[in-house]
Amino acid sequence: MEWITHSEAETEAVGARIASGLKPGSVVAMRGDMGAGKTVFVRGLARALGYTGRVTSPTFTIVNEYACVPPVFHFDMYRLSGSEDLYGIGWEDYLARGGICVVEWSERVQDALDARTITVEMEPMDANTRRIRIRGLAQ
Image 1 (cartoon, rainbow, N blue to C red):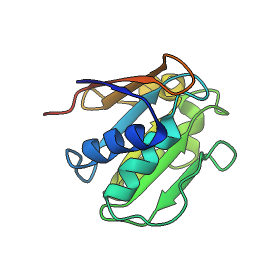
Image 2: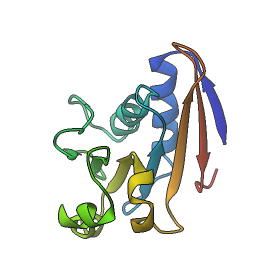
Image 3: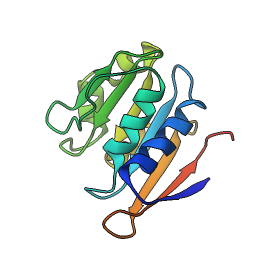
Image 4: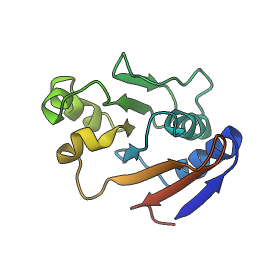
């Protein structure tokens, strides 16, 4: 699946649309440079699942939890050096909790993700336009 978005609102809408195809235990691997819109996408996803609070990048906290149904665990791997660090923060515990795990900078922990992982690649085309490619999600 591929979308071209022209605003934050459109990027959020794609995140919301994807939320309907996720289930407890889903893992979403986000890829894209800084400023690509990954957190905006996650905001749309979490809102579609009923979260009404603020969605921010967990760059310094490593993981943010959004209380919705199912819960969303929003990870940012930018500051981690690899999968060993991911396991050190309780990755397996988060997987066991039955939420949706969304992982920004997932390429840093690729070996911890399995073949069922849904991949979202975000590419800025200009200041407002994004190309979003999604693999591994049934339409």
